[in-house]
Length: 246
Length: 218
Image (cartoon, chains in turn green, brown):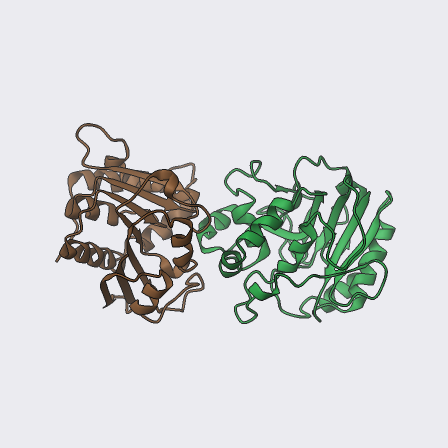
């Protein structure tokens, strides 16, 4: 069973983003799938309430590890208070709300599933990634799109829960946490997570592949997905540009 | 008072080979040059001289040292060996690039032979997530990077079976975004590490203007 997940909390994005993502998935996926939205305001039958068990570790003033709610998706058990059950052969594709889908999402469900997949931001200069590694800056990963099969991401969930205080204190972002604990920028094939190949996913604001294809604000329709995520918490920064391109 | 580092012909040779590595044609370590410069400042040396001076005054007998987040350990390793007679130093770092470079800086201690004064090793190891007991016991645990990491209470918790003496340094300088755990002074630093037997506690204003705090104790 294929599942496409998204997540919406707070007021950064309005409901039109969820509806638009659902619409894009329906128009660009040639295999059957179910669409789910983790949300703090569940209203529809495809909404899943976001748990709150990790809230106590988040310090809003510091803003570290601010995308921690995505970790709830990685639990293979049922969400408390929710009666849906994902069969053991379930596959999951998570997408951020601010993406544009260009190609058939079947591609992501057909990927070898010996490891989970995540966006490797090929637009990053790997020298900067290494230079800033110990400072917990310049992560090469981007959690705007993740693919995994059921239970595969449980070690991540367990690690976050078991080390929550340190993780929330030390990791500026979820992507940074992934890069330090579940990926190896020095041996990119050896990590727990595997990056999508070059030219699958690109960034509207940052480019495509460093250093040769770095033109920003350029649509590349032969790629699978365009990200608008700019790794900040600033609200509404992308609104106008992505809505014009929908 | 230790006020200088012994710049021997061996050190000169090792430091030259570290610089040669970052200047190699393959450019593999080219991005490390700024960090080497930052690790080689007068302030870096000042804080390490202060550290060995105070340990020396306390008369602590030290054979094995665990260096947490010791970076290239270019200054502290010769100071520990020459001034305190340390025999075994293990540097636990999270940055894989550090390993090759710190082994160049400290090559004379890397491969122990009959004439070596001490043995130096570097492991890639996140000390806030994994115990260091897998490497044996240590007389001294030195962390001069406390401002860069979670409070040391966590380290104590995952290494509670050991009876180390801690030597900790930190600062109240919050201007850098990687200073994620600044403290107000040595008392807070000791509190964070749950040190109850304080053998030394002090503050040093470095030449670069930064307040440096240090606590030694159990």
